[in-house]
Each structure stands twice: as structure tokens, then as C-alpha cells.
Amino acid sequence: MVARGRLARRSVTPATGASMQRRNQFLNVPIEIIRTVVAIAETGSLSKAGERLGLSQPAISSQVKRLQSLVGGALFVKTAGGTTTTELGKVAVQQARRILEANDQLLRLGGNNEGPLAVRLGISTLLADEFIRLQSAVALADVFVHADLSPAIVRGLVDGYIDVAFIYSNPLTDNEQDITIVNEAEEPSVWVRSRDFVLRPGAPLPILAWPGDDWMIRTLTKHNMSYKIVFRSPNHQLRLEAARAGIGLTIIPERMVPSFLIPAREYYLPQLPMLRRLLCVRSGLDDDRATALVHQLAQVFFTDAGKIPAAT
Image (cartoon, rainbow, N blue to C red):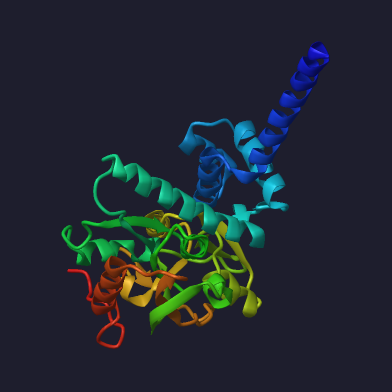
């Protein structure tokens, strides 16, 4: 009887331990997976997320699949521009950001990374030069600046890893409900070219575009004009250099035309839309330092009828 009792105990105990382990698998999400999901959302790519975290792409994919099995749906979808979040993914990334922030706060209790977390400012690459020129190092002491294309900054606002954004309006800002526009101003845009650029008769308009270009392509399509993209880059300065070389035309805010380019006024170029410069904050933001940053940016970039001081 004693032997049978011991056998019974041995048979029950492992089963109970395995059961508890299975329950814990559904109660806890490893912090490594949380970091992976946030990294994918921020970089827009599984491979880039792997480079940031020092993981192989199969490892990244495995972690994503594991979290998807826990939350019950797909978090990311591949697009022409990379990897973007699904509706479920947006919610998951928002929660993941909160978990990482709480984790970082806990680490600070032990003396790591002393000081408050930086306010995260996203800024359009088109506006970055002016921003740097008109801001002081002291004003940016507690600010982390992330420069990117405006749609990527909007995704950061929605996913929760950008607090404040200084960008141009785009289809995402028109459709997203999870961001708040606190200031806006309109300004004209203009075609620009090199002084010696000449369009060959009958040739499609050569344009210098950027990923997700909506201003030029929508305008040209609306006017049923023939065009071809001869240069594409998210880097604003590279596009200007390509225009300087006479490769093609591009558009920029009228006040930003550099001395080495001229506004293109040719009769065949369609009129461009007005641009909307926006100052936005993410949903639920409640931070005194972020509020102070918004006030500062509004004073510099959205006063005097929305005019920005010209470069000297």
C-alpha cells in the first residue's frame, strides 16, 4: 500500500507541475517578445528589428508567432513599404510600450539610466533642418528627436513610441483617430529644378520622389500627366542634390527653395496643393515636459500666421 501511495504521488506531482507551467505560459509574456514587437513597429521591418536586437530573422519571426498565438490574431502585415501593424497590432504595440516603460522605471529604482525618460519628438525630414537651426541644445536637453517621413511619424504616434510630432499632413493624419492636432498652418509648395534642366519634347516628366510620395504623384495623376520616377529617397537633402544635378524635378515648400535651385514655372506643370504643417500629440499624453515642448514649438513654428523665420 505504501508503494502504491508513493507511485501515486509521483504520478500526480509531475502532472500538476506541467499544468502550472502551461497556465503560466498564458499568464506571462516574456519581455524579449515585448521588445521585439516594439522594435518591428519602430523600424518597419523584421530584419531591421533583428539588427537592432541582435537576433536572427527566424528568431524574430518565431517570437512574433508566439505572441500572435497568445493574443489570437495577426499583429503585422507586409506591405510594399515594409512591415506595418494590423488593427490588433496597434493595440498590442501600445500595450507593449507601456510594459517597456514600466520595466525601464523599475530599472531606474536600481540606479540605471538616472533621470526621467526623455520626451520623444518625431519630426518630418523636411522640417528637420529648420528645427535644428531654430532650437537650442538647452531646450532639447530632455528630448529624444526621431526624424523620418511624416507617415512613419504618424505610425509612431498611433503605436505610442512618439509623444509629440511636427510633420506635414498626409492621408494617415486625415484618417487616424488616435492623434490630436494642436496646431496647424498652411503654406504653398512649388516645383523646383536646376537652372539648366530641360524637358525633352514628348518625354514623361522625370520626378524625384520619396517613399509614399503623395503630393507629386496625386497631383500628376489628377491632371492625367505622364511621368516617371527617376530617383527615390527618403533623404530630403539627397533629393535636392539630384535636382541640382539636373536629373529631374521635385517639390518642396516654397519658403525652402535653396539658392542652387529655382522654382519651376513651366506652363506644363500643374498647380500644386497647399501643404498643412501640423503639431500633434499622441492619444492620452499627460506629461508636463511634453506640454512645455508643444508650447515651445507652437511659439517658434506656428506664430505670425504660421510663418517660419527664413534661413540666414
